[in-house]
Amino acid sequence: MKKAVFLDRDGVLNRLVFNPATGAFEAPQKLEDFVPSPGLGSALVPLIRSGYLLFLISNQPDYAKGKASLEVLRAIHEKLDTELKASGVQFKEYFYCYHHPESLVPALKGPCGCRKPGTLFLDQTVEKYGLDCSASWMVGDQDTDVECGRKAGLRTVALQTPESAKRRGQQRADYTAGTLEECSQIILGFSKEAFRAA
Ligand SMILES: [Mg+2]
Ligand SMILES: [Zn+2]
Image 1 (spheres, protein in one colour):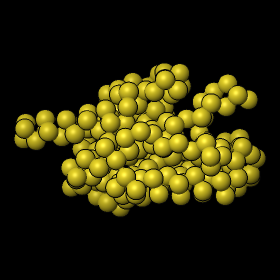
Image 2: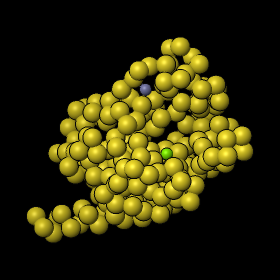
Image 3: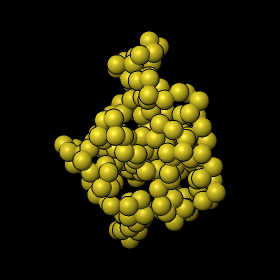
Image 4: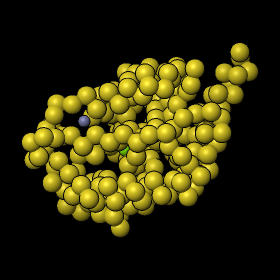
């Protein structure tokens, strides 16, 4: 059976951006605010080499909330894709939920099953690729990521950066890391242990 690492995007693959209007660190809402996280290649290439399929699962409600255009969200995605490929990192698939319960765009109001902690994207991917959930992981910086991964039976790593630390609270992940590279080392270390034990 195949194994996978599901990754959140904002605060994991790219930096969060301080929004003076809300006083919070948020997803980039302008293309020029998109800054990739350090060490994308050094963190993610070893996972691929160890046989993990990579998937992105990201909530992107800013169009529904009227904070960013769909064109900008697409442009940010293209920039991420370019950065990843330039680092030698190929994701299998990218999944974005554009819904939000308070959407100003009626069609995006939901309710939907894909907004994390909803597991719709995850469940569909497990089915499509025949993934072994007990050997697969969720990496994210928010409670909703941890909750989503846990509900689907994955191991979870919470990435706690200074920006995202404030936004986490109730959900306890299996592991906690300070950088994306640390997340990767935890997963790779775990595979080695499991291999030794087998
Ligand atoms: Mg995030
Ligand atoms: Zn959705």
